[in-house]
Image (cartoon, rainbow, N blue to C red; front, side):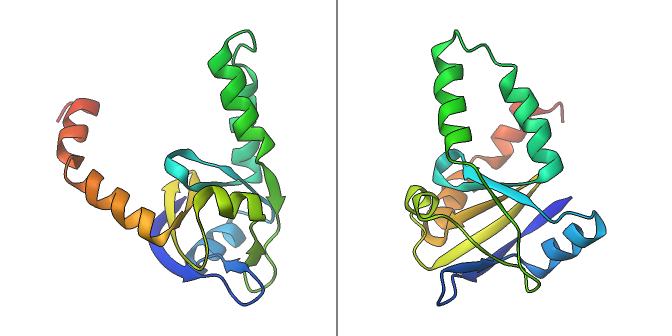
Amino acid sequence: MFYGEYTHGLDTKGRLILPSRFREVARENSIETFFVTRGLEKCIFMFSENEWRLQEQRFKSLSFTKQDSRMFNRMFFSGAVDVVPDKQGRFIIPQYLKDFAAIKEKTVIIGVSNRIEIWNEERWHEFYTRSSESFEQIAERMMDL
């Protein structure tokens, strides 16, 4: 559903704009509300409301008697907030999530199929450089090529 890589900065009011292609996908799929929360590798995850509900069901089914499950759910759900982009696609990321992801001004917004990730521009480029070196080896381990 969401694909591509886009660079955007925060505006003077601290708002981030959803890339136009993502706004089109949202319109086509009647998505008005998104949920943002702490992601992995110090980025912010952004889910459509429907996808958020699917993830919520999945994570709620994890055993609360297991420490890893409790810790993950606490970090994931305590950081969550719903956002509704305005007509121009702008929305505010809470300061605690910007701090978590080290977002100050420039961001890279990537589509990862069922979610959007929001990265500090420098961290994204570091991650991409490290990961691109092993992309083929990871593909071989994950798939029968």
